Length: 317
Ligand code: UDP
Ligand code: MG
Figure 1: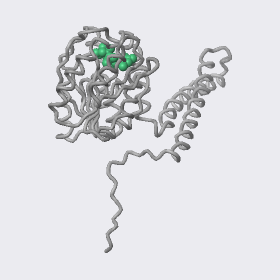
Figure 2: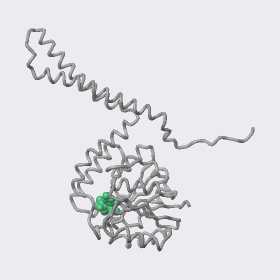
Figure 3: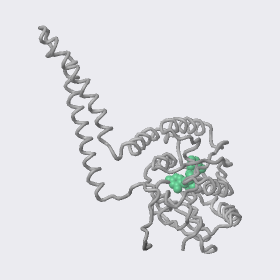
Figure 4: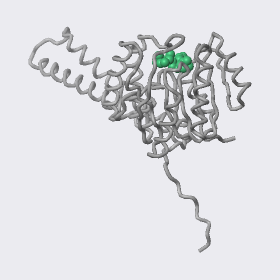
């Protein structure tokens, strides 16, 4: 049965928080006066989290649980949650009590009243450790400049989506950290709203500082996926032709001095020139292959970003 709001909660070893979270959440959902469902995604917890969720599920028929056999990460947890959600709107919330469930109402109202497709929480006064706070604010600034989206906090666990937006997202790896970017690039309207953030009360953060290292490759993937998925040859073509041209100029220079009588056979520049020309051609051909794949898939894939479609008019004139 369709609900007005689905709340998707990824859970990975959060046994101490879940009950308190549920109490706070259900209180704020009652105040929201919308029909709701709560979807817990147990991301392979090895503690007692699943049992705590099961006991809550017995009390409230609007709770659903999906439990993974092993830890798959937050992106997968979101994907499954979005797939299973029946709500007209979908909210996500971390299980660790760091974001106040009361804020769902503020985000939800902003989304509906201001006609956004996604409203992300902004932890303006973030209560995590200093290294995490600084690295994340630098990261947020860099990404928002690269993608030209004015958002302060990309990776807040608290977000509210229109159903179709969440269901259209394809997330894996570290992609949940870029959701506002992905949604904006899909052509939807993204907004943000300040929320109150608390220090972690129970358990430990699941994210280590080393995730900063994976942020850069993730950023490259996102950049490529959002800008060039439909035209990969433009990406590979630019890089490949640049390499090819530099190589060609190098070889032209060497040929010139060769004809002036200088010996070029042992010059490192010769090898560099040959390498660049070969590499350039390879890169361009990789782009051609990628274009071929896109072209082949296009015939089967009719997933276009259509915002409005007129209904056929059956009235007789
Ligand atoms: N989480 C998850 N799978 C993971 C890591 C985290 O489902 O592999 C959940 C975790 O239980 C919590 C939320 O994602 O509900 C945010 O995690 P955490 O608080 O550790 O991240 P932080 O707030 O420190 O960035
Ligand atoms: Mg947290």
